[in-house]
Image (tube, rainbow, N blue to C red):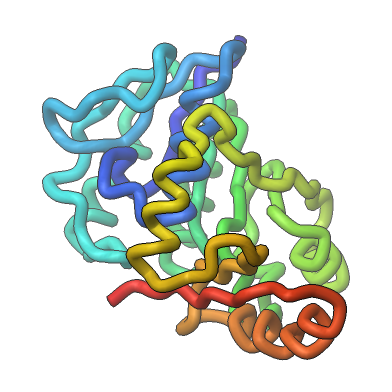
Length: 223
């Protein structure tokens, strides 16, 4: 059993951010490790083997503020009994520099970095890496990292929580409320529009898919 500190955005609702959802699910379903997670005072632990450290003062925006980042940084430099620090964020110079300081000052800690979002560019990406182990969520990202000089990258696809399946009556009600066809297959795009070309890729697939099926496409987005 390993003692792990999950370095992420606050692990508590709203669950509308894929990076913290991934960290939450790892904590929730692991039966082999013991976790400390970063959250707000009085927050409920996201798993039976987890303890919340009240580092944050609010859930914050999509991108953490400078004040929140400083609180996390202070936490990382405090002594603790955690054996592994597991980071969940897209590579960026500020956070990567801070993580290198942690690695230098705490040489016995093992650092893991899960890259939750593919970077806009891989130019100079090797200089942003700091962890003993780098985890990519897709084979495309893993190959791009390897081709740009990042060593030892492993691919671990994100899992799907199958324990909270939506009941059929709820699915029917949602289709009716949104004016969606009842019996045709749905292709749902619920990803980013601002930070990648994934929506365009999905849209370009329409002619090929519609040539073989009577599917209905739904492009979901935040208001």
